[in-house]
Image 1 (cartoon, rainbow, N blue to C red):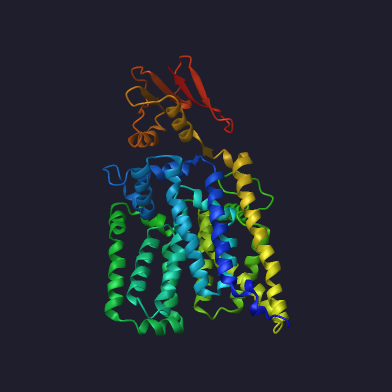
Image 2 (image 1 turned 30 degrees about the horizontal axis):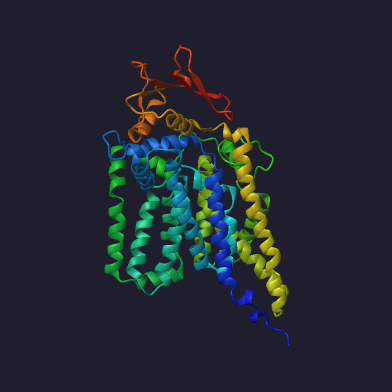
Length: 477
């Protein structure tokens, strides 16, 4: 007697196997990212560290309130573990890991479990996401806040229990989004949708006014520091709204095309080009078709309005091209749904064919996973156009200090004035050296940066074979 498909072990345990697979794969991805990311810093990461380091001091500027949640997390990382390449990137690794969870929960809430498994695997093992989780700047904040805001806001209208909690979380998530450049537009899209979509408007009318007022009050209160900063420096508002200082639509459009789908473009920035491989672009186009043909749902309303608005904003601010990533995640999910639906229409009653149809889709997902990981590793280890934007100086300095058993009483670091703020931040949490921008009384060991080398003959030179200017530090004993 033949077994039914539902009796097979692989079918009965399909979600357990799927969840296990996604955990193992994403865990491996994070490990690979930790091992193979450039253990180097770009200027944006150094600038972010300087902003975080000034939090809570008299040198803190109103501009520090932009992406304040990220900088607080980075400051805590410094206080706990000091200033290293790893601790500068640690907040992004933490938020990236939480973003993976948020992506899965959001897609699982909006769609089916099988779609959530496949879409999460594809979305989180792309070169774009691997870059975000290791970049020690607030770029990850837009993705992190977007997916979690959409998730908690969905639960506001779907869950009978803990209703107040979901409302409060939604209000706080909206407030956090407003701290992030261009995050306010997602808040506006969601509020607008709640006013015009019939089902959501009906659900809102049923809210307990007292509980809703508490959530609104907490959200507004969380914005108080940002409002204070805007009063001190109104230019912050321009940054948060994404209003560019200089505008060249044609040049911006070309840059965005090169960054996102420029398959033959040379890489001359810190981003991998293209951000999305051609197969993924085709899948997103399928998803766009699905949304446009099912635009009556609330999630379609939000995706269409948010996607169009984000694309326009990125056209004005090409440096924010990574803000397109959350919309891309949703398009990928819709693309997977359309592919599964099309296959099921071909075999509406044959259970074996329906199960067999998942095999080529699984192969496609694995292809995306492998290509995204290998392209990320290959680019950040072999592409000189990318690596020229990164510096390994901090890692090399710490290695040099360890080799020489350095202490602050015996070791001085001599740097250029432009380098002084960053190395002062490092020395604040590392008591093995003192730092200066001008020659000091000779200690037992003086380490000079390339820009501040002394006329004396050095004892040795610390070099970086992967840098254009290989001589990074000069050691004088």
